[in-house]
Image (cartoon, rainbow, N blue to C red):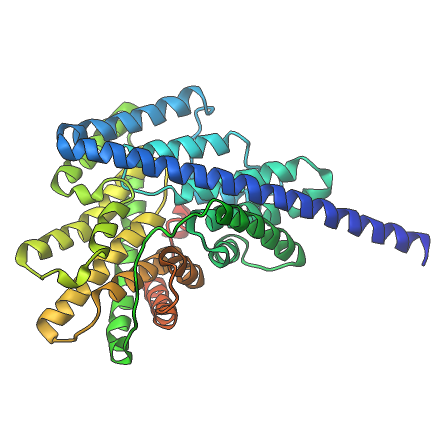
Length: 426
């Protein structure tokens, strides 16, 4: 072997070893951060929502407090820079000079926690994704050997964060591929798989439980046309969510004074919470309540009005939360809307068409369909929802419906809230 070939071989070996070590470290740090954020958010959201349920005045106070504290943190601690969510990751991916600075980790961690705990109608998923991406980006900046692998290490962080948050390693890898990288290289496979393996091992040690404790018995082939209908409805609703976020963010961006943004946003959020407390925070508490026994729910007039109110108001209040300074994205809102859309669809089919479908199945499939259509990532949605309920009985219908919902959404509107740019639409 020539000297040049030997040097090249040693260089590849050293790079492989260093990438392996840093990927494992990224996996551990992202998993630790993700689990910490999830548990803290669940803890304080439960406490504050309980307080507000006992005294409606807190529904008026909490959103104002949360948005105000976030504003002061951004102004005096985080360099007066707005959080752009996943778009920040795209900017870092597409530019050699653009980095995700280290302050993005605590910024998204605390802002995401404060937004959801104090009633902002979004979720911590995007906060987790951006903070995890920042961990990967910072690791890449520490070693010249990693200069060419910024995207791979960012994706490793994201995959680990998603894995820890949803207890689904496949969803973590697929999200990094479908939404962020969009290509697979040897380095991507190495770094992502190692980071995810460490992250998943970490949550196994902690004995993290699935978010939703449900028992899916079976599904029937005759329900497949109804599932396809749900996929189309989810695609249409996802476009409503996407356009609501884009439109309301644009309107709030025209408001120059931050105090006016915060007050306006707080008033809208508080009013909505007084009407429909189910919209508080991530909304998972409301989904868990209905998951306990959806078969016993009867389609009454008041229940129908409540469901329609949730489907109409959730995209608006989510958009207002984000536009007025809250930190988050459309992951949790999409799954929340999908669950109630699926339930309402099943009840309508059973009540008026004697379809004899299973409401629980429609709720689970609806969650996946809405998420798939909202982020244009059907395979991520498939494994993520199966991981959330820790059950793969509905694997095939979820796969089919996710593809239908994404296709429907793209035919109506080709952008998501993450891919839309103001200059892309004339």
